[in-house]
Image (cartoon, rainbow, N blue to C red):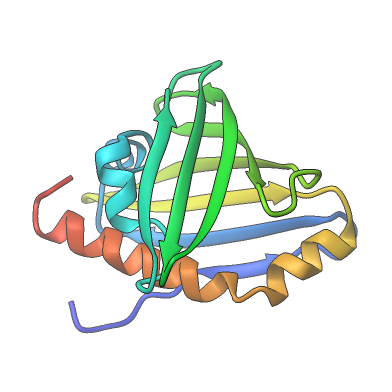
Length: 160
């Protein structure tokens, strides 16, 4: 696969929501596993410049998670709870510990396109338009696109 696939990112004009959509050459089950298996998750999440380690991970409805990403001695910790882990959908909270008062409600769902392809949709509801716009200006698209490119490689290599 020589083409570069990027995520479509849009800000809702009426609500503090970020929506992302991206197609994968993977089944919904493979994408669900990539998002719920901590050993796989750390291999693809975030930009190439960061290394991620899981502190705790209980990927079930009612479970919680925390991971730490780092580079050059600097660490960034994230945590949340899994409100729902289904076969085609995950609902969770997401907090960057550098801004612990900011909690986003994230919903991911996997649309089966057939032939081993899936369109993944994500929606992040943040607490304010200012918070949403700060996320968008943070360079998040680099981390999202580089992370999903790593996920593509893991699927292509048969590791998921």
